Amino acid sequence: MNPSIFEELRWRGLLQDVTDESEILKLGNDHTFYIGYDPTARSLQLGNLLGVIVSIHLAKAGLTALQLFGGATGAIGDPSGRSTERTLLDQDQIDLNVANHQRLIRSYFERSGVSVSFVNNLDWTASVGILEFLRDIGKYFTINYMIAKEHVKQRIEGDGLSFTEFAYMLLQSFDFLHLYQHKNCRLQIGGSDQWGNITAGLELIRKKIGGQAFGLCFPLITDAQGKKLGKTAEGTIWLDPSATSPYQFHQYWLNTDDKDVVRLLKIFTFLERSEIDSFSQEVATAPERRSAQKRLADEVCTLVHGLEATNAAKRSAEVLFGGSVEGLDQNELAAIFKDVPSSTISRSDFSGKTVLELIASSKLVASKTEGRRLLCAGAIYVNNIRVTAESDSPCGPTAPIGNVLLLRSGKKNYQLLKITG
Image (cartoon, rainbow, N blue to C red; front, top):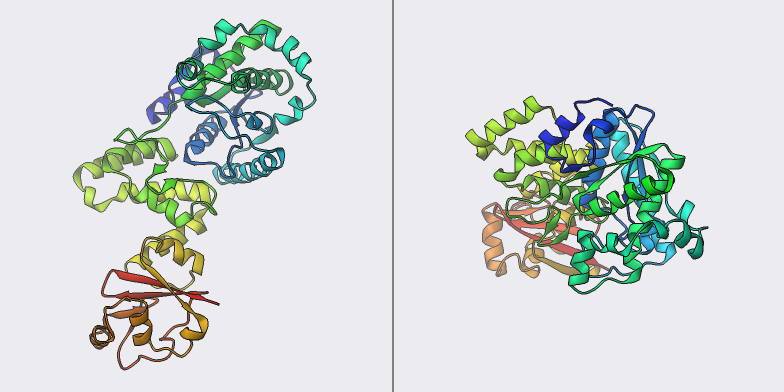
């Protein structure tokens, strides 16, 4: 493995703990590392992207990347980093979530140009009986060892920990043992909240088969205010475009604080040091340009959603400032203007109405008198196309986009008119 990988990960802020750095560097290209994802939701969230990025760095350094999906462990739920027990999912939902997670992660590796392999821990766990598991795995763990783990202590001192969640550590350790024996896997990586689970796996491998394995953790990322990245007032930032649109995703990164942007460029992009250093200088000397934020948004959005989606997101942003809506569908338009007022009108009432009648009924203007004045002044727009009193006609100068019409008065006073029926 390339020895510069640890220097690179440290510089990028992607290395918090490692069990034996010098020994890991001795691993050849025929060795494998893995990281696990539990399918507790249909979509992966922004925090999961960090594991993908570290995986890509390690794959580029020479190790074989293995991504594990928790068809078995997802049925229990990892207690790490949580103060309450997760809601248990049925197996059909878990299987659907696993399939979606695999689809998402496969696309990230393909865009990065590195190979990846997938495994599902249900494949080697489903057939193991409870007595077999307790005899072959459970006997290698003392209760004293397990309750000394930080995430277990926190739950015991708080609202308590069910036996189901308590056993999660054993299942994850069993995963590592299985991959060690069958996939030549010597290294497990994960977020810092996984350190206890990872080291438990190392202990199982050492005690049961006398093997040597390793662990590596990256930090959980917060912003300058200490808030967990990917959590906003509006909710979680998801990686599936059906849950968080590429436009919303791109906007999230564009709104990065100057205090955070250089650090996040290091963490979430693969840009070279020289380029990131240039952005660091520009943030200090010309922050109003927001060049670093634009590049961060473009890079991360392209990794997650592809170049075409990134370009569409940028076009969508232009719409906010009066740009053309050509090429957008009604869902994209609704996502862009999700925070603006909206009103509805039946299709029968919509048909034949002039722009003046539409803007008055939609409450974009206070009255028809005000609407007529704005029309005469050229301050009314339909789908960002200016309408004048002379051009005012039934349905306006442009057709609805699906069932949505975008109305605007002045530069920023928008309203979505939704046509029903």
